[in-house]
Length: 164
Length: 123
Image (cartoon, rainbow over all chains, first blue to last red; front, side):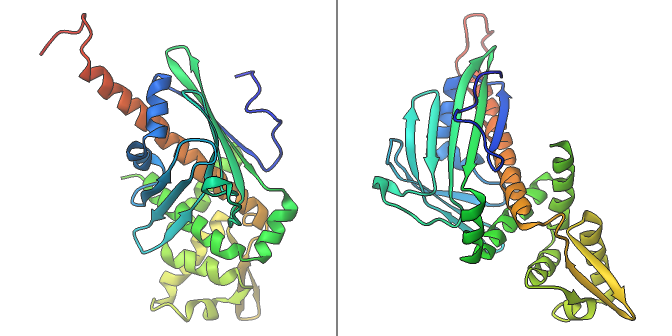
C-alpha cells in the first residue's frame, strides 16, 4: 500500500483505483490478457464488449468496441505501451497499433499493476488524463459526443447497480 | 472521496432514465423553460415533472421561477464539465475494476474446483 503507485506522482486529474483481490496473480493476469475473458468484465451489462484487436506487446493494438442495449456504441482504439508478464500493463488511447498517432476524444494512458499480497493480489489501475488545457480544447472539438457516451455508460452502470 | 461517491450514486440514478438523459442533453445546449423541455415528450406533465424533480434532487439540474415560468438549467456545481468528466471516468473505472475483481475471484474458484488437491475429497 505504501509503495509508489505507478510513479511518477499522481496529478489531480489522475485516477488511482486500488483493490485487494482474493485470487492469485496468474488468475488476474489471465482475466486481463485473454480477450475472451476480458470481454466478460470490461464493460457493464447489458453492454457488450467486442475485442477488435488485442496484440499484447509494446506498440500492439488494443481496440475494444462496446455496444449498448439501445443502439449506443463506444469505439475505443488504442495501443499497449508496456507489457511485463504477470505484473504490469500500460496502454493508451493516444496511439494505435504500430505506434500510429491517434486523436481520441478521451486522451488517456492507463497503467495497471499486479502484486502479490498475502493470499491475494493487489491490483492498482492508474488512469492519467491530459491536462485541463487540452481537455478544454477537446471540449470545443466535440466534447459532447464523448460526454454522451459517458452518460450511456453511466446509465448502464446505474442499471447494473440497481437493486433487484 | 466518500462525498463524491455518494454524489455519483445520486447522479447515476438520475441519469438511468432515457427521458432524464434527454433532458440533460437538451440543457447542455442552454437553459430552457419547463414547457419547452416537456414539449418533445409524449408524456403527461405530472410524469414529466417527476423526472425534473429527480434531476433537481440529485443536483444535476436546478430551476428558478420567474412569474409563471419555471426555467431549468444544468447545475454547474454537479455537472461542472471538468468534474462531470472526471467523475464519469472514475465511475467507469471503479466499476470496471470491481467487475474484474469479481470475475478473477470466480475464475480462481473454478480453477480450484477443477484441480482437486491431494487433500480434497473426490466426488
